[in-house]
Image (cartoon, rainbow over all chains, first blue to last red):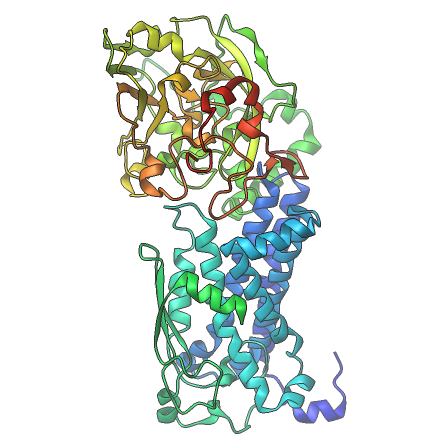
Amino acid sequence: MVLSEGSARRVPAVSVALQRLRLAIWIVCLLPLARLIWLGLNNGLGANPIEFISRSTGTWTLVFLLATLCVTPARQLTGWTELTRVRRLLGLFTFFYVCLHFANWIVIDQFFDWPAMLQDIAKRPFITVGFAAFLLLLPLALTSTDAARRHLKRNWGRLHMLVYAVPVLGVLHYWWLVKKGVQTPLPYTWCCWGGERPRGGGAAKTGFGRRKVGRAGPEGLPPKRRAASSGPCVRSYSRTRDQFSCWMPATNQPALPLRGLTKCQTSSSSLVTTLASS
Amino acid sequence: MHLIHRPDIVASEITPPDVYLDRRRFIGQAAAGAAVLAAGGLLDPRAARAATAPREKLIGVKKSAWTVPEALTPYQDVTTYNNYYEFGTDKADPSENAHTLKTRPWTVRIEGECAKPATFAIEDILKIAPLEERVYRMRCVEAWSMVIPWVGYPLSELLKKVEPTGSAKFVEFSTLADPQTMPGVRGRVLQWPYVEGLRIDEAMHPLTLLTLGVYGEVLPNQNGAPVRLVVPWKYGFKSAKSIVRIRLVDKMPVSAWNRAQPSEYGFFSNVNPEVDHPRWSQAKERRIGEFRKRDTLMFNGYADQVASLYSGMDLRKWF
């Protein structure tokens, strides 16, 4: 892509290492889709191909979502500040896979049976939370462009705080889908717990935008203040008690809609009701 | 000096002539095989786990009138897409892991409220009544279904041998739980052994099949060898696999799924499109191999035969 002079001035040049990383991300992120196509053409999707596609695209959505959220911790660990600039790419691949997952449900699984789908969204908690997660990702993807970011100014960061709710809903969606005793969602729950622990930065940690190097913002803060401010935190979900605890540390962050929730321990069903009605 | 020469290549590894003579296909398959190995089975989950257990034909099997006029689910799908948690919770786990199950020697103990409690060897069970092939619908509680040609005979034939008494109101089935051969039993997915139960009239119903084979052959391990139950009007989990003990009892047994999640799995678990699972609808099902979902039938299409067993019962309460 040839950048015009104007945009070239705004976006600093990208290092060779970052270019390679981006290429690697493109390849890695397209592999699951390539595999599905390969399996589909070679009768390899098993006895229940529709379920296979659904599980596969859902799994990869979660993986890329968690990878997106891991960018900031990785940057802090490595000190490679440029790393933040792969976040939008990862975020958009997450959205790409959730779209495949959603499209598979609408087209192949339900075959445009709109009444049945609407009923499922309203009645089936696992579909309700899955759909809520998709709805939350939608504005993030739509406002992922540089122009939208400039246009929304500070609100962009606030909007993109939504990304923190998505893995929680995604993991919940997975637990409520499987039969009792099936532990496949467990690794994602752990990653979700790890990825959402309090850490530096405010809105800038979200996965759908590119930080501009050298601009003032939470990422530019000195380490001490960075550690003091922290994002929302989802601690754990207990299946035996049908409960999960999450809390939002009261910090010096800009006013957020969720700020009142300094600590909430809630039954997951009531959380869903709240999310569904909001 | 070795008196007996052990061949370097076992017979099963020798490429059959029709494959190696077809050079182009052979090269293609070899390349695909290499790719599969390279990708650690990721690229073709089914090829990587090809089950190579020997298949044994059952002799003297008669066709039965109990045959639904619907297309059979292919043998490959029937034997690789299974729920058998003793061997793992993934659908592919049983076909990969169940080769460790030892089905000989095997006995089934029948005891409890009966005049002649006894232990039957599997060889004798095979001879109690003539084997018949019945093509039944199989509806899983997870909203998928198959059409399967089972081989067996009515459970009532076996139960009559022990002469149940008047106080035998229910039948409890216990299945094998061997941590040595069953990796799933080492975990705590369910409380082992897996227990299922039927009311005595359900157990004596002519549709309830004591099953010893499928597709005219001895049951593969992953399908519940050597002897299992098939109750076609109930969700699949009611059809206990690899049965080792049958008890005739006067109280309603607590089944494994009922114990694990009483709000989701009741004792009766009759296929009923009007009573949803708390987390998903049971109104439709996906027949394995079909694209569009089809409507689930009351009692899985066996209402004419079994609805009378439940007349006067509130099936929402007794789900």
